Amino acid sequence: MDSEELLAQLADIHLPEPVSFWPPAIGWWILAALALVLLIILFRKFASYRRQQKICQYAIAELDRCYDNFSNADPEDIDQSKLNYANQFNTIVRRVALVHYPLANVASLDGAAWVDFIRQKGESSLMSDEIAEALQYERFQTKCDVDVDSMQDFGKQWIASLYKGGKTSTAQSAGNNAASQGLSDA
Image (tube, rainbow, N blue to C red):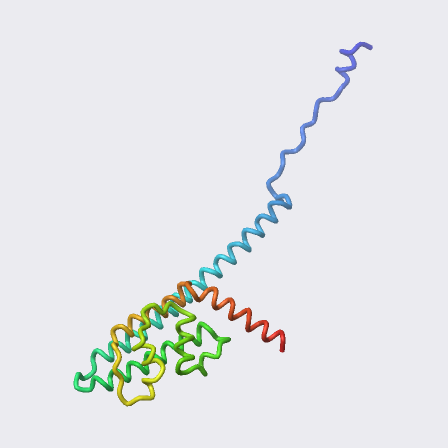
């Protein structure tokens, strides 16, 4: 037998079946699962961001409503209008602080401790001594002499700083870590 006869006895080469796209290999399943988890995380972050922005807009709208009430008040009763504005301003800022810092004892703060809390937690560069005094004592007075325009600007700045980052992201995480440590120590 020569080599040509032997080669003639060989069968043709069988090509394998074409590779199917389904089911995909395990690597594609893992990649799809990771992509799904990433999409869920991104969606939750976006939803949280949108919720925070709506809360911020609502709080600023409440501040604007108080300012409009002050602006539309009777000019003869300006002292009472300023006092009402200072009290409403303080209430709104305290409510925002309670929402943003639920683990802090915000509700029990008053006087200098309340002003220190405001200075520590948000952007307070527009807080003058007059505004600080109004936040500390004016709600207990019968007369209030504060620049309502600068107080309004400060309130908007402070609220916006809480929801846009700044000092609060590190302060809040530190406060939350301290609170969780306090709970674990107990």
